[in-house]
Length: 205
Length: 205
Image 1 (cartoon, rainbow over the protein chains, first blue to last red):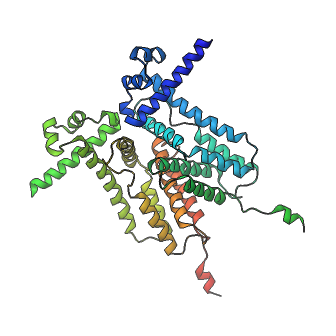
Image 2: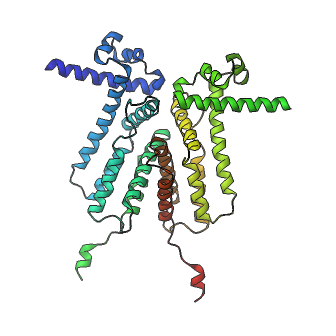
């Protein structure tokens, strides 16, 4: 058993080396040779852990996805008011710190690369769209959405907004910083929600 | 003079061959050899028109940008009511047909590539952000924006929405088709504008 654990741990280390190579040299520099060197392994040892280049790349990308998913699940289980929980989750999807911007950059480079590799990896369906649809349904469950909202279109709109912000946070992190992203997302969530009625006050009459 | 015109025409043909190579093989396949072959030229002849690979790529990308700019300017000079003009312009920025989706794909691949080439080409500042800011100012000039709108944040929000839609139109053109893009953009423009008041009716009293 410890041997298997070591095997998986080493695979993760190689994945992390792959991210560093992609960040530094782009996908065109992510050769087995460069990755082995970055991981401090021989080419032969690298092949022991991943038999093909594409197997390694797919593993490295799934790890990015898993890290993001774990962070989001962590917030989802917290005891927060619905709107606040939604804000926190959306702020977790859009990269706002150095680590998540780096992850986004790797993800982005890979998405472009994988488009020319059919059936390699469906970066297209990264689960974010489904998650956004659930968030809109969640607001609706608590009667927070505007009455006349078209939930299907609102989900598509929010999904585009979030991915657009993520893209801009990566391309122009000075302007599109955490404070600005927070203001844009708060403004959006407020605009799709009904005006808050102060129920307690109402009940006093 | 005709010789100079021929020279520029040939450079454009080579740029178009470059787009086709990028679409088919990705940036990693966009070698001088492959581009020369696609353009039906020898490597030597290609070098006559572009002395370096990067000079060719930058020219090919500027041409994509110019085509988009020309289409947008064409709409901007039309005599249309402000909100309708804005809708048309936004629908021109988001790719909704095969040609513009292809352009977006080339642009996207190039943006990722250029990130690892410092000072090559600032794909980051493609002029769209400035254009979007102008559109928000334009709505405001006609008193169409909601009174309490924060124009700066609204411009950032619309810019993210538009680029997110463009990204999704490219990655998932079946779901994110022209009809759906139109509905999302219309919903957004309506939501940032004040409720329409029927001024003529008001004047009758």
